[in-house]
Image 1 (cartoon, rainbow over the protein chains, first blue to last red):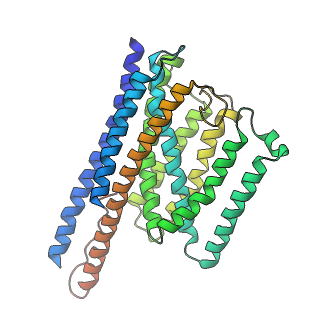
Image 2 (cartoon, helix red, strand yellow; image 1 turned 90 degrees about the vertical axis):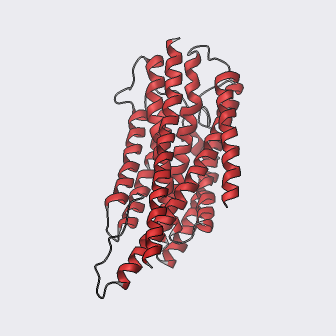
Image 3 (cartoon, one colour; image 1 turned 120 degrees about the vertical axis):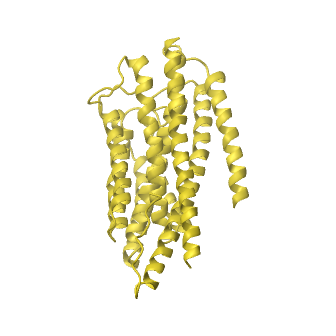
Length: 43
Length: 299
């Protein structure tokens, strides 16, 4: 029973890491799109 | 393009759910380890994906380093062809086969060697010029994410099976940690260096960093280690039903890695577009106004 905890911990850890990375990509995309708009306005 | 991405995302999501179902429900329970062995369906595919991404990073970095001069590019092309041909032939020579560690199949070594020219020419064809550098940074970053998962799930698996989280001095574990550190330094270099030589320096670091990948992989044969033998390429034995699930899981993770790399690649292109726009703006305003700093926010 205790071993199952390790199994789920490993699976959850995997998706937490992927989720955190995907969230960072979305955040960076948002920031760049705003920056691109500003550059466009500057022209 | 957006439609293709959406379709691929749906296929990947279905594949990931199917792989999870296979891993948790369909795959048989291991006689010795029980259910905890099922960590293998995330740990091993993540390691293979990380190795593949670092390998692509290695090839893209070499292509980038030699792309400056036509003669160097031609020489590199012939060296890669020679490596592929000689490597494959050598794997089937009895003298060379004797030096291959017991349990490792010569055909597996030959296939790995053959991947070098195949990837070299494919990457050169589909990622010309600066796109090579974009591909290199993309694969390094996504590779680090997958390598992080290997380093996190490994100890979680080791604790109930070995009784310890980490085996200090174990060559497989240490070389994997070193590999992760090398690519983290690669990303740090790219993030914080503003020198004109950054891309070249990063490419050189990537070439040396990639040398750690074979050390990680072959360490099991050449050194005494607690880590079990690999399930593909010889050495280890695995129930065919387990192997089937493992390959499905790897397929799902490969599709996922491809989508993440695609997004990261587009992000890098957008970043460079903005940097270029800022540079043009500062050039235009160089007569009277202050120049704008070049944004590096996405890295």
